[in-house]
Amino acid sequence: MLWILFKLCYNLFRSFLFLYFINSRLHLKPSHRKTDIFFFLSHTLILSLDLFFSIRIPLELVFLLYVPYAFFVVQDNWYITGFWLLMYAVLYFSALDVSFFMLVSIPGVNAAEVVLSSGLPKILFLSLFSVLLFLLLFIVSKFKKEYSRLSWSNLFLFFGAIASIFLAEKVVFHIQTLHKNHLDGPEAKFFLLVYLGLCSSMIITVILFQRMSAIFQLEMDHQAELDAISMRDHHQQELERLYDQLSIRQHDFKQHMQTLAEMVKNAGNENAEEYLKTYQKELSAESSFSSGSPAVDALLTAKSLTMSKAGISFDCSLYPFDRLPMSSTKFCTMLGNLLDNAIEGVQRLPDTENRIIHLKFHRPGEMLLILLKNPCNPDTIHLAKGQWLSSKIVRTDGSTHPIGIRTIERIVREAEGRCEFMIENRHFIVKILLPFLSHQTA
Image 1 (cartoon, one colour):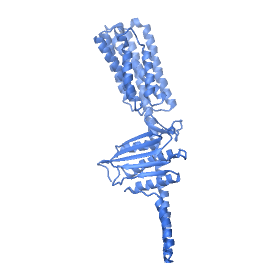
Image 2 (tube, rainbow, N blue to C red):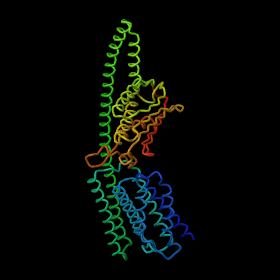
Image 3 (tube, helix red, strand yellow):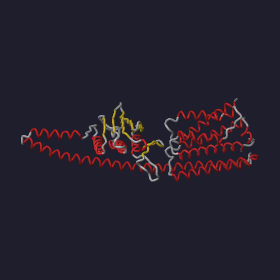
Image 4 (cartoon, rainbow, N blue to C red):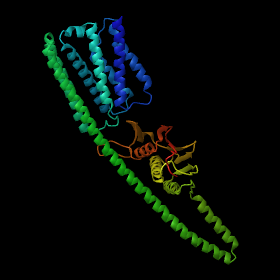
């Protein structure tokens, strides 16, 4: 009875360890909890069948169960998922073999008792294995999850390295079976050293993988910064065009006033009135914004002119700002990226579709809520690795990556806020919540 209770706890812990590893290394779909629970229970049940029936489940079959679960709940590319599944297998067998030879190298401990019996040696072996496997998985889980992307060539080099270590362990295991009658004492210590060496090689490979991934991530961040600078230049050019238009408008206004003055002077009151009404209609047709922030007003005016030229309607509901939750430069960069993404998304739609962008600001307490909604083509944008990717931008290696969204997320994160992106009914929706922190200045 004690053995059954221990084995059930051991099987539950094994199921937990795999779920812990997958959650720590890969990006999962939002609705994965029910699948996790189903896998946890079914995996534990399959591992425990030999306690109640004369059935021995091969370890290879158990590992095959991991594949459909992982590919069902994971959002990452298949080769990333396969890489970490193989990594788990190597960690598993490394911990298993090291635990075994640590025990059988102790004088008086028989290898057959460790493997076949259900007594104290087997309990010590499984306990030691569980502790070692947990420590290995815990070490690997401390690496940042985002540091899991490499180019195809480098990724398959690491894939080959891990596969080679896995193959080497299998070869050593085959040699071990040929010496199964001499696994005590010096023989066991020899195999223990071999497995420790393979385990160390695997850990070093993981560290190298993470370092190269960090460098790759740094390059992507630098590229995003360059893209953000390019967008700020684009925004500056739009503001300069707006200034030029306002200068022309001011000059034209002087001319119109001179014309009105001449009409009134000549007693052409009816003509003057008609002329003035026409000019007022032209002025009212132009979008004007009054948020309390000159920088935000200028940006919204510039983007409104861009939308008007592209045949896009702009529905903007402002909240009067007495201050912004961050510097005006960062706020306008974030808002400009939001509107640029929306404009480009709407421009990809057929002219027959509703081409309108909705932007609303709310002030719930000491928070600023920004809601943006625009129609989009869901086939041109998708969620991968926890990030929204658009087909409008293609990297040299054939992959796509977000520019504006990464900048928005970085700015919101630095302001201790939250942002959410989603697609509903062929509309791309952005929700941003920014706190007015006490240390912020107006």
